[in-house]
Length: 86
Image: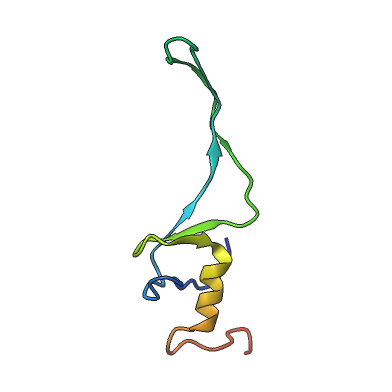
């Protein structure tokens, strides 16, 4: 996850409330006749090249770069345009 501002490209009002969505895989075995779960393995986190972010205002979900690029296109009023300049 990057240390850069986010801005929701959908609702265009949220800059602070987000959640990160992680993917897990969990193997299990079922009885073929009854359908009862016989065994569960421990959950394993799946590798993802880029985090999936969800806006907690409008529930829009997308890759992290969509939120970062939207914040770059529409900087917060009063924020420095290029904070690395000085």
